[in-house]
Length: 320
Image (tube, rainbow, N blue to C red; front, side, top):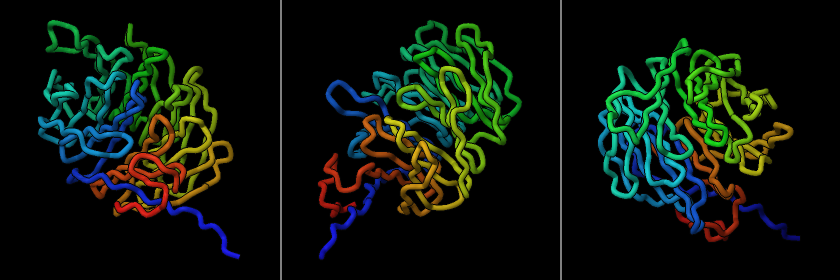
């Protein structure tokens, strides 16, 4: 008797970057059902794409060094990028124009918008956090500066729901800051340098990685909810919006792995990239996830292979 075959996972490849892709972010779902994706790359040219199809929308031209982080405002009217050229730039996503360029004294590794998009936070090689108010007449300097990290800051998140700033890096600690005073109010200690950190789509979990371990923290209480150990160095992780699974990339191999959230059991393993996977992210509707790699490409993968969605026609014969 013939058995029905399981649909093969066929990723869509988003070309355009010429060097390693190091950061990805999806927007929320807009009122018309669409959503967007922004990518940061060592080629210095962050790109905006249609989130469902990966179709290129535009490239932000102006940085003179690698771009380490790229984020969109909640309404997707602005983007902010952090660069090795010692600047953070804010862009108009409709025109591609630079709205603001903020100078730093060293490489900027992380950036994010406040919930209402009126401020940005940056961090990097200076070991300092800075808040810039985009509505100030005098934009030459930061509104507030915070010190406390003892090594490079690699990741910055502005938790808009609770109005808190999260930062992490090589000093093995997630620090939580009140942006009103810019005082540190909490910390989450880990076992090694923190490679990645993000807030889950619903704001319930802080996910972070160090070495071969993945951590899930309660974003309300900052207590550790779950730690899962793997057999490889984890570069990035993203939790599915319904909390049933998460995707992880490795810094020393080419595989993309899917895990069950509750048990930590490996569910799926895929190979599509030709270099280590530096960044991963689930779409806001959970229908796909994106991976960015040393090979300079972004690949979009279906959560449920064979389902009709975006450019996938549901027959498993897509030409990528």
